[in-house]
Length: 508
Image 1: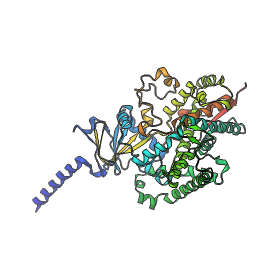
Image 2: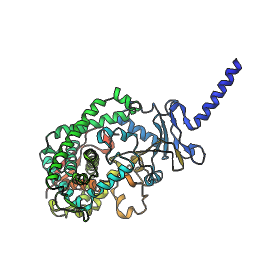
Image 3: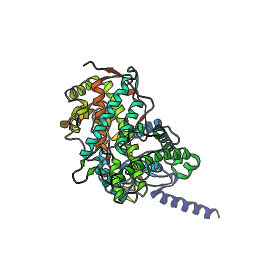
Image 4: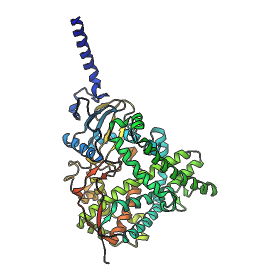
């Protein structure tokens, strides 16, 4: 009998060892393997977990700030090599350099967004950010004309008007202690509302509730990201903040739906006419992204739910990302007065602000370099993710179905191989003559490949308009140093503290 149990134990151990070749049994996930059969450690760093259960308990209940520090620690520990983590949701391939990112961004098959985007689905639906395959291709094709250069000119008028309103607001604030976190957030949300919906946010009933709901949804999502147990829908429903999340999502849906219905009535009264000549992309009147969607609805290519999804997506994505970049840009300009003076000299000879065109803003090369260097050091979206919907080969690795791929934009753009002294703010890196030999995927603040950000020209134009308006009127002086910032993960890059600068009126 003893011999029987000994043989049974040996068989069980051998069986578990065999299974463990393809499955990390204790971590409850399939393993990533090398295509050529070599040990995985020869291709990537395999990050050890704090327990025998893989990395499942490494991030349990960490704060967004601690999660940011943890990811930077992993990148430092792996010495610039991409690394693998093991969670019950699946193995996670973490890409932290441009060389490994290249094949991913060029792939036409690895385009499905990762698990963190699933958490946004009840809020944004299957809009352009989250949708996949045929639906994504259709929506991308549908919305691309809304960002045509000629339409950007109408958006430019909105950006200038809102920039002048921002100056008016700044004029009435105490210049020695400006909380840019609040004023820039409001500026950016007003811009995206008017360009997406064609209405001014302050003119709509319920705008304050909408604004509050937007701000309250994000912390709920981040708390869910930071707790692997809440990744499972049933646990989030029972023990997470599901009811709060649903409540705030309904507020945003009702607000945007109300405006869409109002705009639709005007569209129908005009006989389903579009304000854009599709062949020439010639704008006949002030144009909003919603006009494109209503025109497509009239042709039966999208329904009301689809319009709501795209409007909610664009408002959410376009608001927080540009706001984040603009705040960090102001902090950098405050900290480096010589760089700020170069920007001022570049814009000093421009015509009156009200008459500035898209061409004028595009020709501001040095200011553009400042914005790019800001995005390099403080990318609005510090990490993007993908999920393997089938067994996939990437960078010599076999990735099983449901493997998560995290592309750490923050680490890619602070790689000293491509950006010497990566922690030093040097806008000159992006002068034309200095970018000739830059790796094509070393600077990817708007992601890259087929799923790059559709609104990147929109964002750059908005940020330039605001900075030109502010720098023409004020010198931006420092109150806080960027080295003292405590960065943390959000849907966009966040800081643990409010952001302040001092504004000194220019004497002209």
